[in-house]
Image 1 (cartoon, one colour):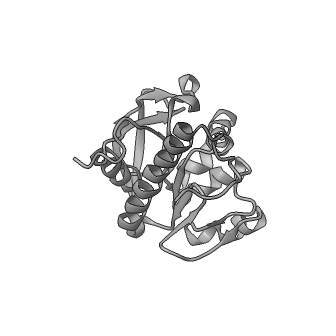
Image 2 (cartoon, helix red, strand yellow; image 1 turned 90 degrees about the vertical axis):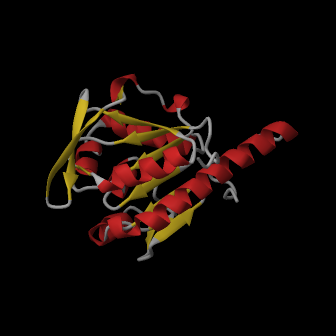
Length: 203
């Protein structure tokens, strides 16, 4: 097992209708890198996935959103699917949960339609990112620079467009999550105040 993320706890925020492969593939990659990955959801004890053109598997929810605290996690991953982020952006608690990671300068990864929730959290303005193509106008209107690229990194935010991008997305989130933790440990050891959320990107 790769130990880059050993001891790190990652939240995966989702609800009914998330794209199945956009959760299972990154989760597997993060766990292989040593991270503890937990599904956080407002849906209840279980949640159904969408599998490309039909309903997919049902997954166990690890932590109900109403009981989850961003302070207990080191990073956040947001899978896409059309229904999933459309429901999350109407959930005040979900939006606040997402915003807290940006406020605290923690790494966030989002793929496909997931940036809809980022728009609602008002964290895309001035950022460069990608998504499923149909979100281009929404993101541009929210103040983001949208680009059609496989994977995009803006400071601590990693975004990708679709399931076909998952291999690159998975590699990049592990790289950036591990880099963020290494930098955090470095500034702590040296006694330097942590970087502000609007500061320089982690390596």
